[in-house]
Length: 147
Image 1 (cartoon, helix red, strand yellow):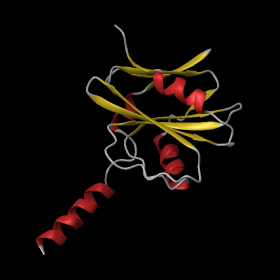
Image 2: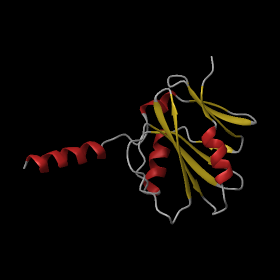
Image 3: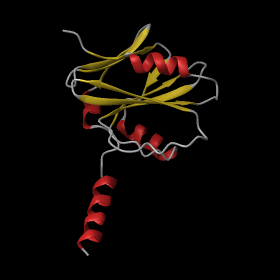
Image 4: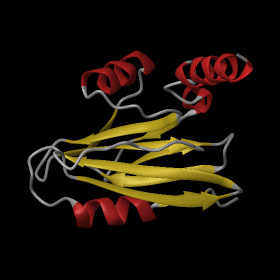
């Protein structure tokens, strides 16, 4: 009985984990030839290509996760390209679960450790063109903010 109760509590806690990181609200965005997501509280920044549109509304990210049936948690940032190759990506903060992604949708995943936190880059191709080169560069563009 204790084991069943423990499993129910664990399942409940996992199900209640936030889809969007509490740090999402402290993101700042800078647009120009390169677009940036800057989080002073975490002391990180992501330099993205100028064709990346960042979603800055938490509800829109939750809708995107639900529509794609993604079980991603602690989303820190979400971006989508507006020219070819078309793709979207998520930056997760201290995501501690299995991604459970299917082979039906091309994807790219890379973890980066900064200041003791793990940031997971998850990219999805939207037009089945290879976006691996962009994903590789974007995942390496997540860096500590230099003072």
